[in-house]
Length: 536
Image (cartoon, rainbow, N blue to C red; front, side, top):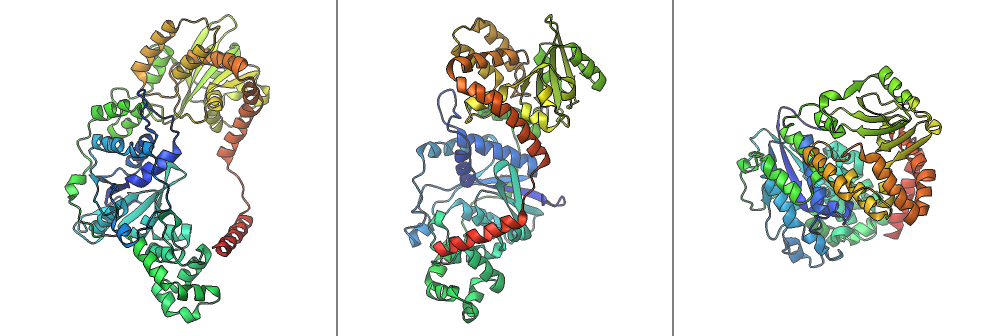
């Protein structure tokens, strides 16, 4: 990441772009117990926590649109007219996003007649050449909108998610050119040439991406293209000559305003006075329990400084659980018939080091619990019955994987994903409850399991979110299998014959990567661009 350690970091967030992106990235089934849809709020909060972790900013603000028309609508009534009406369930979540920002003490800036982009443009000018320019600050704008690339300069960077909110790419001038083929100062001219269908900006009819990039590479700007119009070859010359009015109109619409009258002082944006209790209450209000542990990244860990919380999930005190090395682990596994293996990744581990939680069960029912940082356990568990949770992620960390020699292996998390692919951050206790109630011949008392689960969850939910208690693994597996056998027989076959074997392949692909035919892809890209130009 581009970051000057000698300068303070100012983080500016394009709330509208991120909230819209989150709304479509996360399933609508993300709701509070009261039925309030919060998928966009959740996705926005994930991004915010990730950005605070990555950038460690001294200053933060958030820009938002208002519902009022902007100056662009006044000069062009068809501006953004092709967009579908905003979903009401998305509109309802914006006040909730503001509530989350209030809990973080992050100021929200809006101004009627202007878009969030214009507010961010004004902040960029403050930092680069205005009232804050004498301060030792670099501005990082987090958005999902490429229009903001035009603001990049020596003190302003634009950060765009690459596929998801946990993979943020920071763009400077060179990175922009490398990715898109034009520089930040050419963004507006590029849009003047090709337009922008998402905003209903017309551009010059018939000029496509490939032609626009070539012209800007050769002449540098729209003004220089006009001056050298007689040198422009082929059909592009005619299109540009006939489309001057369209181009200038489009350029005006695409230009971000940098002189919005906003009343904000630099001291207002200092990230300070964060109250963990307020944030925890807000997260719990919207059922963001899976994010509570992320607060450690901001506040540090409270009381616990090692893996004690995870250890106590065995129902024992921390000092009663042994950490095993290679030889001890091999000996324990060889002596037992059945294993339950939980993989705790670095994000879930209190000391940020991944490890395994293992329950080994003998033929007579004797139970031994252990912990280990040895991930290559597969060579020891041949001909053993093994239940995993998050098996695919564990495979990524292992070098030795004789899956064909395992007697039985099963992944509880993968099974749940097969049943409900839209769910995220599912809890083991929730699965236990859900599928035990769906199976008619279940013998266990609901009150007994409820008491056990609630005591564990209340004590340790902050530290571990995907795994609530190892003793539930087999119970949950049995409940789900009974459900599949009685209700969804075809899914059980799919799980055992397709999903589990494929999960191993996917893990290997993730670890080793894939080879690509770069020349073939480049040729395909060029062919597609030519086809697009013809259609336009």
